[in-house]
Length: 315
DNA sequence: CTATTAACCTGTGAGC
DNA sequence: TGCTCACAGGTTAATA
Image 1 (cartoon, rainbow, N blue to C red):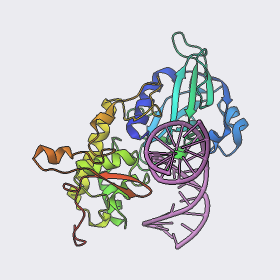
Image 2: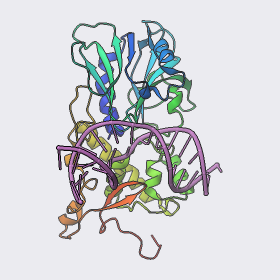
Image 3: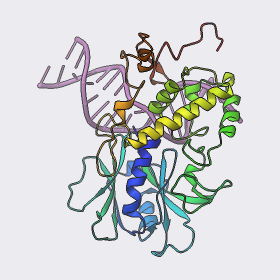
Image 4: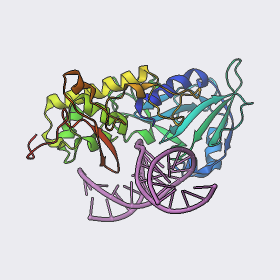
């Protein structure tokens, strides 16, 4: 499932192939992938055709390409092509003679460059992801952050409602902690709320909580500052580790732009490990197995020994 | 205002 | 073999 590290893998892969190239043609094979483009496929095509990709930028799980109306990129982009991978979305660079993927939804043809694939394809099985055009708006705190910050101080409007992610150099722990303490909810719910901290999905939420030795139902208004610091540090570490491994994937649904899978799933400590020993407990001679529980209509994995539930409501 | 839930989707695999 | 059903889960609109 694409969370921050997987989207960042895609961003890094994409940027050298598309930056500076002009979108010469747009083909929409399934309009459901444009659900979030309110004005429909024809408007979508009209917006993109003839524009030039200036950069590839990310915040949390949102990825966008600021577009210039002119090939020489004069002036700040006013629109961007937004991509969200949802559950199963893929952005693939493909040569024109590669047969269409079974779930190919949108094809962009790019101005020819020697040695580079002609097409950028959006492939999506479950159609939770999608493409759409959005405006670029000023931010009050210096742009989307990350290493692909261009142009500074502008952010895609459709990504402006989510908080900065823990890998963003401008991520503010103090802001996160003060907002967390005001919530009246469980810790995992808060971690998955993109408006509080972005980029974290079900897999990295469980992994972060495991690393920080925290229970998913811990009330957010009881969390001590040190606990919250440990949690954010854990999230940062697990996502950086995943990034270094090329991302997490359990099947062919999540792939990089070349169609290859990452291998971080071998490094998971909690997620998907029901019935298997907790590695941290095992290291100190304790016999404990990872449990799976239904929580928020999805599976939550944790260690009952090192991430204990409260016994009498006291944490 | 905040918190929670339903709905959107399709392929896969378990169980009968 | 073929059917049904649970499951995977990010985001947002709707509801409490």
